[in-house]
Image (spheres, rainbow, N blue to C red):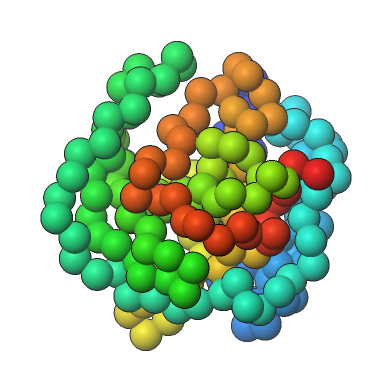
Length: 186
């Protein structure tokens, strides 16, 4: 199991490196969909089984947004598997769909985390992840700003399998716009 999980993490990191290296966002999204479907269909550490319900790429869900300063705030999430996970708000992303807090994982190795919760009945109720650099999910930067592409939203592992415990989107990561992009529930 340990080496299987290591392999899963490597493959996810490699996938996001390939996504960042692909100039056309629609081609990058097609690669992301195909590879995730393959991983979910075949990998022993997949939190669920594929294919995953992901609509075709829609460029209206993409923006490049600077990370603006925000008052520091601590977020402590109690999980059944990882104990207390502590995040610190490091900034805000002012997207066309609403502001999103950007969080830094304080534990070993750190990482930027940006979850998104929207009111669509076709998305996981606890929110989906856009960026989780501790696990390799990183869409990159352009001219010092972050690529925010909601076509790449994905449900956390706990949405697929109850053996996983996941931090869910806090209030600063809830938007009012239904997002029918990224991984859906149906």
